[in-house]
Length: 351
Image 1: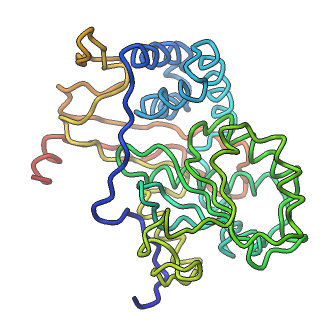
Image 2: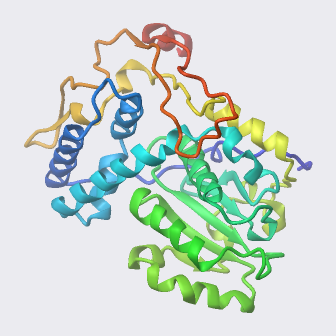
């Protein structure tokens, strides 16, 4: 194919996301965890309430935390409470693009393509490091994780992180201290989000780096990491970049990449975004699912969710909470635009 500076934002045709199945007992635990988490919700008067509710109502949130806790309910409660507290302070879903854009200029982290199970691929290129270590580097990584989650096809809950050490030196490689902070965020606040960790072109000189962080890897994370694997076994040729043996001849251009990701993910200058609702028949908030004894699911309305009878959803004058890393010299929108979505119109338009 001809060389391009556009990244791939959809999986290959025919890609099937492996379905997860839960027992009735596990489904009941997932539902109970959701009910517990909703008791911790910020009040509606808090500017971050709508974003916290949005995260809690995502279909993958409660299952991921139950799996991470190995179905130990008390542990799952502690984990999700800790993440809710972290998200209120860090506000990962409201990081402004202009806050982290400089970190993206050299292409050290690129979201491009999907593996055979439909996981978005996050390429990390330590050799392209262009800034000094700072909290902004971590916020850039979190911003990229959020964008990769935006690109996940329905049913997919995890990503591939592919670290390419080509051209990496001791100077450009992140410190063990920074790596520990990254691991802390991944293992505590993006639980069950790493589907595969692939490391390629690792020079012998940097083996000590992985020995240094190994004690901080939980066993599940460690089992997901592979060194110098045959990438063609894991990623379709048309989704893998040519420089790693694939058939997608990609050349990084920062402005093209940046603008494409912002457009596809619908990111506003102040970090907010507004999503279209799925067709009415598919809108099923987590707490609206009640597990029956025969394994069927009964639909109920729930506070904060969308009921099947909703014909119109409005989000109006929702203030944007300040980012903990916000630069006061940059304009921040106080509220995002009013949204009125007529579900019936959306369904008719897609028919």
